[in-house]
Length: 372
Image (cartoon, rainbow, N blue to C red; front, side, top):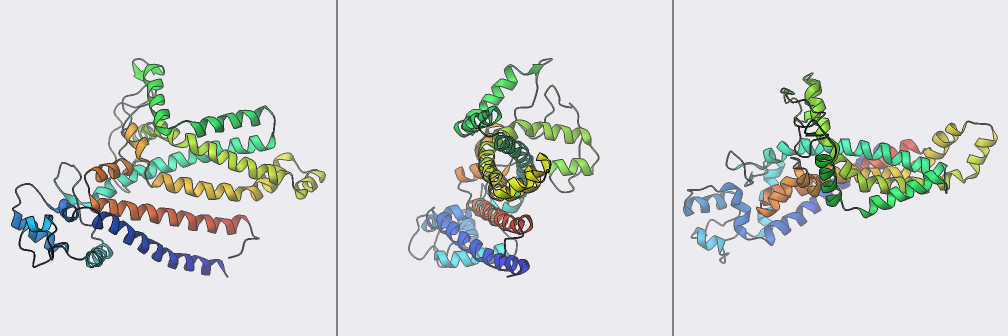
């Protein structure tokens, strides 16, 4: 099978995977929660019971024969549209780009779910990319150093670092970083790094007045570059340092140990002995021959790490008050905002299956022996 045929087949299967996930998510949010939760995002203060019932009927949750709003919320017989009919009504709206309305707290009352999601998702994207880069750089470096110096001091230190990374809970490490920065890493009365928010203006290395940027892509890092505002770019990057370190502490340990195991096995192969016997430099042997054959498991892990970052890490965003999508998903869960939760789960699922597809494609480029 050619690579493009494999990609087309995977894209076709992806549709069915997302369809199945949407059905499961819909059942969990609409079938278990009270019927009124499906229309809570459309309601506002001062709306009469008749108006509420009209809305419930308009979004395909309440039947036209339902006599009153109270009968609907009490789930009287014949008042609630069957769940499978609700699903197809909802699916039709989604395919038209209508994800309904969110009831998350904001300054504008209820507003579109898609807008509530897109307002925060760009922040998670930039934090995920920054954290992934940090994880890859440190994880690959530790893994290679540990493998090339197996059972020596650098390897022992790398193992110790991995054990510490496995053992430390992210929420505890994040709080520890905040205390360390606020109480010990200070200069002229300011902490070295900002400990909350997505734009650091109050820290020792921050720029107090970075100005503004134009929202070309809604991703602050890219928009600051496109706007030519390097001060804003600096403050944005500085604000991601502590959350990114917290996100990376466990994943770096996991990635480094995976790469070390693969590298140690590769370095023990006959073709490595042959390469060294030909007089090739050790750097060429390690990076061109051993690493290329040992990198595939690490690529798989890297794809899963990045997709988990993009899905939004709730604990880290809450600790650092970072306005990403994970903290909003937590608020949506508390508020029983089913429209937002459905969108969040489907986007997260799409990211994961897309990451797996990209990893499989990278396999074919990195290892010509792999055929699909």
